[in-house]
Image 1 (cartoon, rainbow, N blue to C red):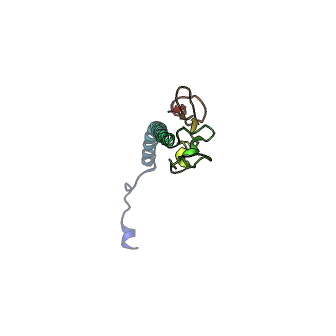
Image 2 (cartoon, rainbow, N blue to C red):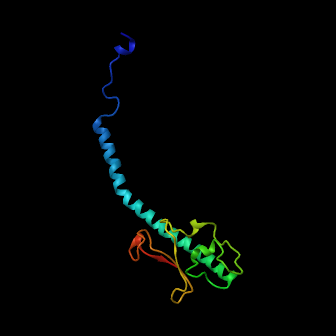
Image 3 (cartoon, one colour):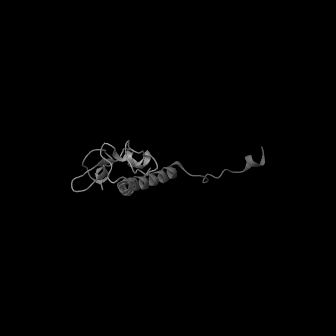
Length: 143
């Protein structure tokens, strides 16, 4: 027998199965309590992101108006900010970098109306669910 074989094994070294299970239960409890709040924060962040993106789109539409003398039509849509519509004089774009700039945080194109009631144009998204109406993350957002 070697010297190591002769040493007594310490029965208290390491963790017992019960101790490991208790630690895992505590971790699961913490994750279970914090996950809903974290997911709610992600939803609010996407809504705020869409508002910021729509403000940028609004500025680009106004630049288009200054150059062309009119707002893009609904038929032209927000693509008129990226690619010059046929037969347009004065277009000095592109006013946006890419198609990604006209896509909301839920990977759907922003909706554009012109005219929009008492406003010359409106930019909107239906939120997370992509349907009119809704609350919280699913609510419609427009400028």
